[in-house]
Image 1 (cartoon, rainbow, N blue to C red):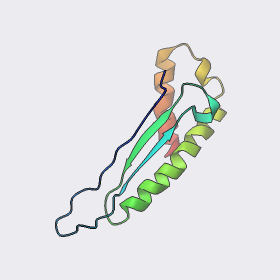
Image 2 (cartoon, rainbow, N blue to C red):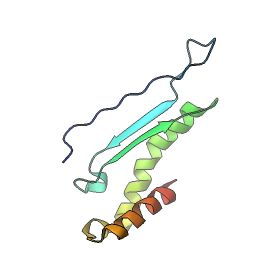
Image 3 (tube, one colour):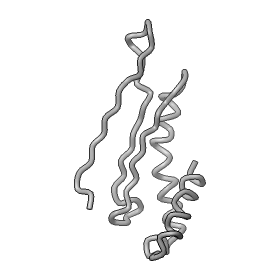
Length: 97
């Protein structure tokens, strides 16, 4: 059981630019779609000129999309076959992106 979680992120190094924006975002979503024990932890590693915007968009949208997938697949948390569980999670991520 997870009772606490934390995060850490730091700005990348760019020679000659001491004010470089940290382009990383993170999201910590416990109990996705109200399902106890099903948590989403993501680090969105931004790159390039608009990396901070892209990582912020993923941070905002990924949890919503994952929750939508879980709500549509109502029997997911009742599955006992670990192979079926492992097969579905990557599909949720692919569909969410």
